[in-house]
Image (cartoon, rainbow, N blue to C red):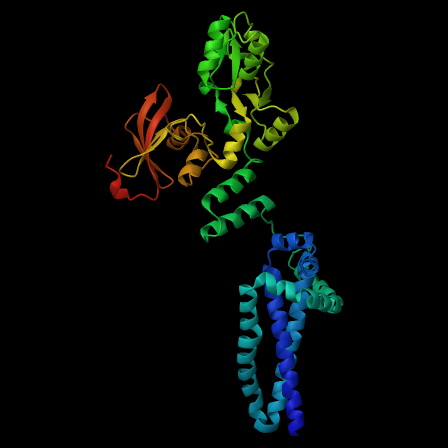
Length: 432
């Protein structure tokens, strides 16, 4: 073979290897590209991002075209190398070409471009989007034929084309992505919790976020006006439910702002005001309403306060806009509060003294714990659920890697307990 022909064949092999690297790197970049980022770039007017999104939209056709192109150029380059070496090595050419081309293809046409694509995924994808789009358009008809044969073969084994593996809902995919970035240090815990709180609104009900009826500060509507005014002022809330005959019979909601406005109209005096008459009708919502639906209802009704009832109409608690916001941003303490969480106190031995009515979700958020929230709302309820009984004072339990000790109990209600979190050493827990 003439020297000029040798260089021509080597040049052809080199071009084929570059093409193989292009196909291999493009496959890695386009399958791992951030769809959220590409979507935003397309909204900002990026044409390459629009090409990426169009390719990823038909992932099966994209991968088929890239695999077809990559397989073809790899086989062709190996065949050319074998033919070239036969002129000098004779029968040994096949073995030498196999070893040589395997090493070259593996290093320079597979590992190198794919490593680069992983290291610069988005940039790589944007760069190759246009040529890949053209390649897919050319190879598309062949890919369609290949896919037809593939699905026919899979059909022999009972796999139908319309079937597909169940994937995570979009909300869960976002949650998993945020959690992954948090573990890698890219997202702070507070931001992770806020994003998770927003995603949780569609799953939480008002029954999960409400203030229980036992903790509602309500006033008797039949109290004399001066005593009723005093009760409202001492409650520390801007809105106070009024009851008549029995505490669970709510007849209205008294707004402190309405009282002040009435006093201003009365010459700045509260004397002679019908305080109970200033109450507005109570708004009742079912406890099965999701937090997301309730937030939208607050917005439409231009309200901030609702009373929660069960399916029988019995009062369960109350929910406010702030309660829902707390699920997103965490507890937002009032400016007059001395301590943000007086019901959760860390001890010198690493344990925590916790009021039984503290919600499990608050503990998970504030202390970065991972206690389950599906079985009970409060920490006391979680212990009762797992213990399958109402524990006695002094009893200790171990659930979910944590240690629980019952400190106080009032009738059938756990009012205080000590918790050693899962990340504390067991040696710090006294025997019980």
